[in-house]
Image (cartoon, rainbow, N blue to C red; front, side, top):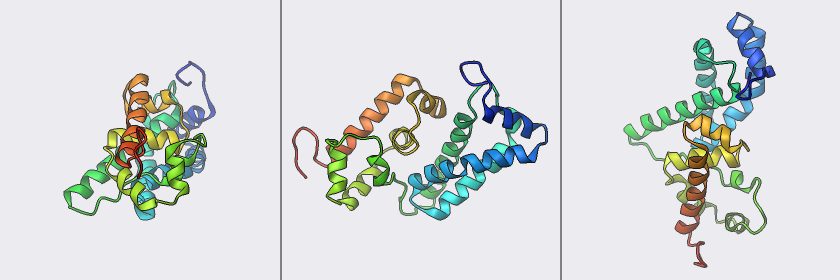
Length: 193
């Protein structure tokens, strides 16, 4: 069942997997491996870390499948695990004083945006390094909703469920993230780069 009270295919597969059906879990991996990898890749900009996060996400999902509530969307539950894996790895990286390379891909910001979007204009001018530095500095609480919205195209309510905040807070964080990016790049209120 999803949050509206009906079973979906993913929930059925998860229940079958919980009852020992490895093919059912394999089907879930096949369906979500790409989206989870892309999410992690855009979080870290490192294919190796993205692969590790993807693998760890599915291992953790399998290990804790008994905690999954089939009345909720499986994708929401899985992306929550992936998000937590990214956050944990980021914290470990910061503790080791590595270079902070976790950022959203500029290409992800092109999805679903109108032609007049200032971020699109910046990307078309190929000012990648400025944008990457700006995105890298966004706090995780703003970066994650932005990635989930722009990259994965998830609806705000699902982002709220993944991040564990209200729908209004998701909208506010995405708005603020975009505003922070534009302000830092000098593209807000008529400021030029």
